[in-house]
Image (cartoon, rainbow, N blue to C red; front, side, top):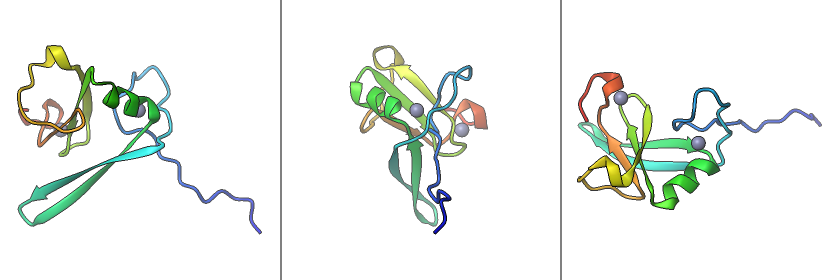
Length: 101
Ligand SMILES: [Zn+2]
Ligand SMILES: [Zn+2]
């Protein structure tokens, strides 16, 4: 019997203050993205804190499916008029990877 832990630890992949340590993720959020060749599932590891923000209704998460960067916006101030589910906007591009969102 080995005492070694085989569990992989995931860090939260969403934006956190760079001065703070990124918490471990307990959950995943999933998105089905349709590309030219078919469907791609994107799974993002998220911590409980981020889940709370997403469910709180005050914040909107912008997540770039192209480069994986993310940003939080206050929903009331974001002026985002497109459709989104669960307070997540899946952007095809973002300012980090050169696209416009
Ligand atoms: Zn998080
Ligand atoms: Zn991007």
